[in-house]
Length: 73
Image 1 (cartoon, rainbow, N blue to C red):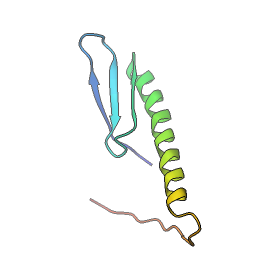
Image 2 (cartoon, one colour; image 1 turned 90 degrees about the horizontal axis):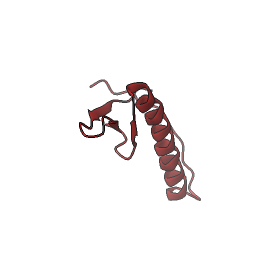
Image 3 (cartoon, one colour; image 1 turned 135 degrees about the horizontal axis):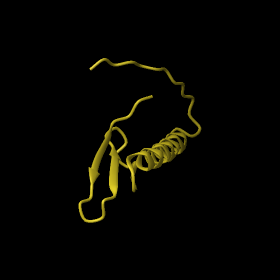
Image 4 (cartoon, one colour; image 1 turned 180 degrees about the vertical axis):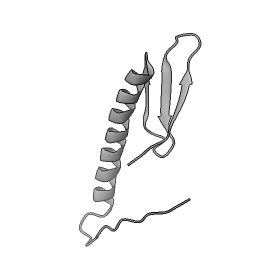
């Protein structure tokens, strides 16, 4: 899956700060763009894991199923 990262370089610290457009809770930073992207990968994975746990708790004791949906926008 692809995610869009919004990146800003802090002019005072020269640190790159990123936030995932699709998962706004996924935020990280890095001294280089490569380091930022590695850290963002981890932040996105953690955000997805948290969302997965929240969904399981929300639907506990219910019969649910999943289907994939592709939207071209």
